[in-house]
Length: 307
Image 1: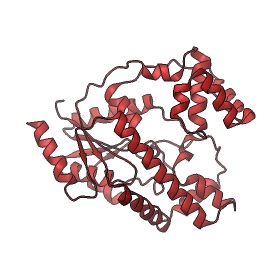
Image 2: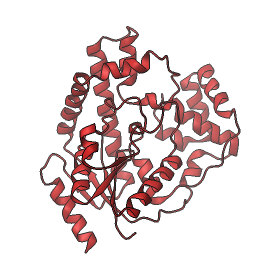
Image 3: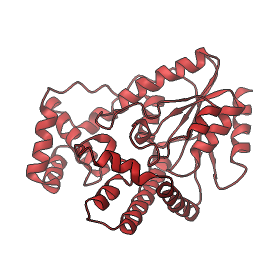
Image 4: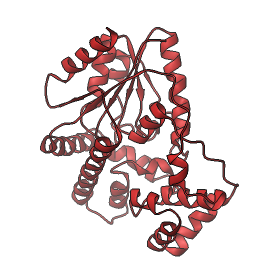
């Protein structure tokens, strides 16, 4: 149980999966997903999940395990990750967490306060109020009760606004206050590697990856979900590019516009991720994934840790 849990994180398209795979091959590891959208099963291409060839090289866990309709909270993901880490260590393998969902990783490593369950039906009521009031009015009302959480949320993020309002109504305490409470720390020892590529390189890579997805069949993948007329509230539909391709299928966007907007939104997300990592995470090493030295730097860190 003294074997460290390796964490490979960074913004989207920064090369996390490739580094995690290389480390897993060198250290008899299992790659465990730490990306919210890669947990869902319907968009393996759109969410850049490991290919079958990559999965055949080393074991992978928590990829594509949930339907789009299920909500994956940080607490639930932590419980799932704990099980996989324990399984890896019991098998004599090295757990390698790979993903850019920083809050999930922080919750696993540092803990989070347990928020009481809310009464049945309260979420549906809050969702109805979001629709009836409109996003701006709902956000303004929430800001009166929990300004700290509103400052962290994107204006159109209905799921998280609704969750914050739901917690306020049920407990009389802001969600931000609950989240600031101390939680149970992890029992594992972590070694964290943050990939921080040069901004121009990352912007270019995001565009190339989006185009590669289009060439690899992502339109058919998304169309399969679109034709099922999914509930727009399903959490798994937040995958970057899904809403833009949906709009294309409705005739609201040309394919080129859907492509351009999808790329822009992904770039904006990567920028927010890096801002979060700079302020919320203290990695053991920061590597430039544009360099061939990223694996070498990580190996040096692991050697030093084991010594």
